[in-house]
View 1 (cartoon, one colour):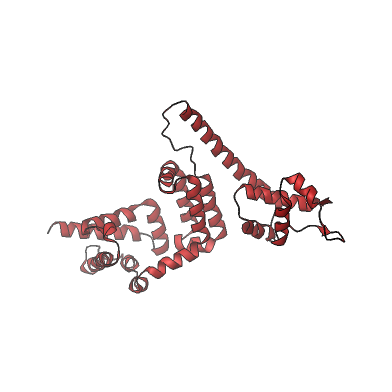
View 2 (tube, helix red, strand yellow):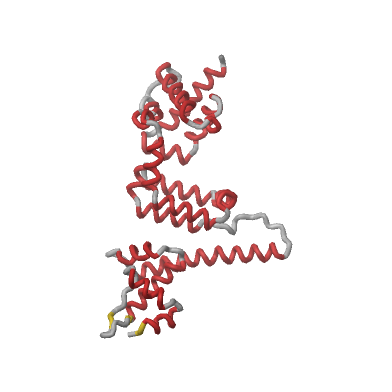
Length: 290
């Protein structure tokens, strides 16, 4: 058994921090002396070691508490995962150091490959495993979400470049995305609450997709297309919608995207995206000829 002073000296953690860990239930002493002094056994020291690894990886104390209190918590499996994350972190830092060495020598190195998205990709994987129901609800299936992760991997350099431009660093971007994923349900509810009631009750794109057995150029289908366009111009920001040609082209490009096409077809039936694209192409062809 070790006293709190001995644990502080051994770990480099202050006595006050160890006391705070006790107060919040993160690391309780193994027992107390008759005088009330905290004592820690080997098991408690192993737990402290685990906590420090989580802290090194940027986990918050409340998150660490939740993880360690899970009934199926596996200490060895956690060590393996922590090792994997630390190796990713080390590789990124080593890459940044190599880049700085070259920049210090005056070399032109306008590259963003060193700013990898490993942490963000890991956050997506964690979200998928933690909130499976939410993933299926909003992406249609786990396979669709895996496709999203693959797209992130394929476009890692470009996404990293944009992330740095908009957030200042990959770390800031990852932190923001982590927050969004951890509060995904709340954010989606707020966004849905901002959508006009009419749109929530009458999903016009779903209405269009549900009639994909009809001719895309028919009067009935084109009436729905006009309804969608009118709704967009009445409710969406003008700089996003633009003129009718711009909006139709935007819809055609969106529903032609391989990833979004897969998601939409999974949720609303095979061929739905293709039918929407065809319907808007028919609208453009008809109205451009007038």
